[in-house]
Length: 239
Image (cartoon, rainbow, N blue to C red; front, side):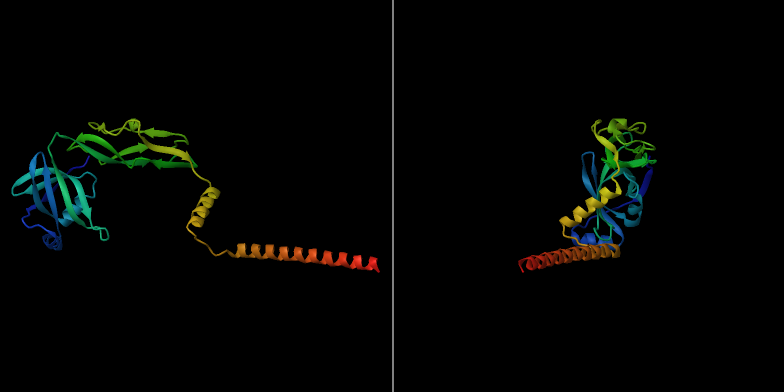
């Protein structure tokens, strides 16, 4: 279960792109705190502290603002697409004992049987849990499982106090036969041909191609010689 992370916030009274840029230059993040029917509260948070806190999925934040403390969960986090720093955060208020619906990551433990391909159809699973007891992940044991095995949502072992929201018949993990090297190579070649990718021939392929060409030329030469001989024999008979 994730523990509370305390973060000191400051009230924000300036808005707009220019104000947001100034906030970020000070290594802070503009954010909005809302929920439980209250008016949104605009705040700024220390950028480094927030970044560390959000490394944990479904991090429970204890927002310290003007002598008051409120619990919140990250609802939406916007990051710079190139540098990755946090540009803005929407936080939703929660209370102790309150049930919330969250997506929790699936973590596979162990290795399946040889020549088995494992497909994770659901990277996360939607569950309901108490706000202060949200699991960081749900572990699924796959050691030695064979081709043809399927793990459905209803087969998952959820942490105590959590309930499944996702359809219980939803396929979470699927086990199929791994493709052979020849099948992978053929699929790759087909995909490359579709987009017009051509590769230089290897030395072995060039030698084989040259040998085929030489063999073909020798065969053609032999055919021409046979034809000349027939023509000569035909001329002698006429004489």
